[in-house]
Length: 328
Image (tube, rainbow, N blue to C red; front, side):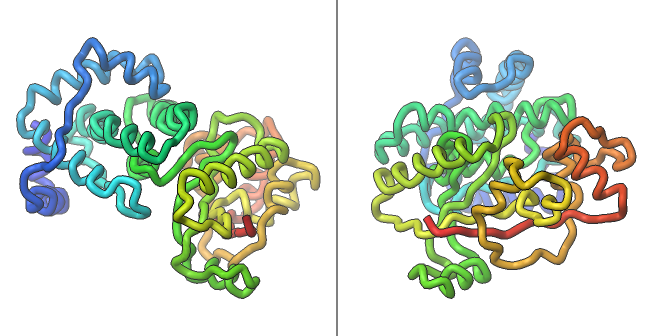
């Protein structure tokens, strides 16, 4: 049984004790029944090949009283501070011994939390299309997991937690996360005279896969939507700065890509807050080729970005995360 496997793991046993120490859940966690669940999954853009498996796993979950109690505890912890920046649920990875149910447990937490995030969106008057496209990132991330592993699951469940916790929204090409400025980036913005600084609100930009080209026109339209969206739906929060932390801001890319490439033009929007000193070669390999563990020698060279990432690594170079910002 799922919970027995978790209790057998020393670290997870401590996590369970902390979760249970909060007492009985104060919110109700209800999963759609087996007939309704496929429609719910399809509304969340879940890949069709994952649907039947998740319906079958739902039956296993509801037949296990301890697992169902754990689901309720997780949902209660997740939704109690809905919308609070940095307040979401960050579950530990479950061991392989928990099998398919452990691998997909977080998916069921998000499904059970759907009524709460949708209610929060209604309270903020979030447009239905923005709500739908934001929450559909669950399906995109299931597709990413299947592309990499061939199985149903989520590589980084905490990431989807941002979407289902009212902290992140899909607005056109980009995703915008309600966040707070870190020390170095905040100080850079303060030094520029923007009237903000470390710990103040900012919008963190994320570039999702499977969303088309990163064209300047698409970025401009997305930024325009964001300025209007947050002014209207979060008038109590002032966002003076947009930030991005990504390998796409590694200036070494300009050695390989033309000045009019989408990535270079995206980089030009940002001022660099500080230089990263720790290499992160797996990030570009994962995002460009789908699997961070692919042998460098075998990386394809079909596109300019593929050639840039692979050729640089094959030449003995390294890639670094970039930390950029610009005034909104």
